[in-house]
Amino acid sequence: MNLASIRVIGVYEWRRALARRKVALLVFFTLLVEFLPFLVLNLLPIPDILGGITGMMWFVGAIVPHFFFLQFTALLIGSGATAEEYEQGTADIILAKPLSRTSYQIGKFLGGLSLFSFIALLTTVLAIVLSTLTFGVQMNLQFAPLIYLSIIFSTLVFFTFGFVSGEIFRSPGLSYLVSSSIFITSFIMLPFLVLANALTGAEIYLNLGRALPTWSVQNLPLTVAETLFLDSDEFLSILSFGPRIQGTLTQAVIGVLAYSFIGISIAFARFLLTDVTKKSTQ
Image 1 (cartoon, rainbow, N blue to C red):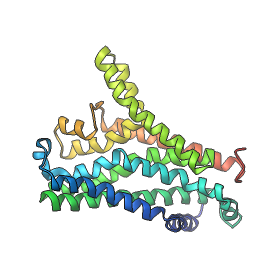
Image 2 (image 1 turned 45 degrees about the vertical axis):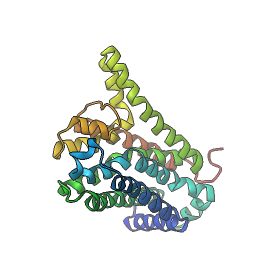
Image 3 (image 1 turned 60 degrees about the horizontal axis):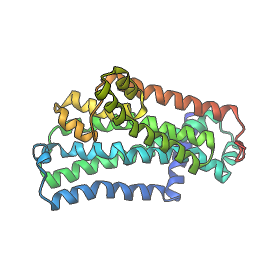
């Protein structure tokens, strides 16, 4: 493993994304996702439910894209990181150079993750700026960096799912379809498990809910915020778009680490133990 090689591959990942206009499209949709809600709130009367939390709208603007937009962004970037190289036949060319497979894989992973981190940073900064312009002075902004880091860390789950799908299927379209289907399925199952618990009182449904990848992803930033400055369960339930399955910060961290470790291990094993060729899955 060579740090210089890892850095070169990471920079190459950015250049490749820029050349394919992926960064421009992601920035455009990020601006759209952040600007439209604040524009609507600025033109319409403030709903009663938001009346008491206008000083916390930066957090709302940062956390809401995390539940949907940023997860699909992570899946898109992760699933294309290596799969696009296989589809275009450039992986063999790159690895024909004096570059170890480990350095290549780590560089692709970190390059893609840094690209996602930039998009997440953009959503957080825009949330702070737009909420201040729309609602005035915002509270607890000193915690914004920690919320941003918790978003990056928790999204490792689905970035890794995209990355491992790209390595397994070696087709960007198929890998994005499979990994996004896992996200959607997990997201849909959570409220049904909450309902099953409410109807039966069986704790097993809540435990199953905590075992789903979306539980850790959604709850980690919310739990960090709850620990630092939020104390309203109703507000947190609104932000999570439904009833929450309660859990601890430790449980959420373990969930993120477990899913990410499994995904990274599978991706690296697949890459290191198989031939790197466009038709390697056939």
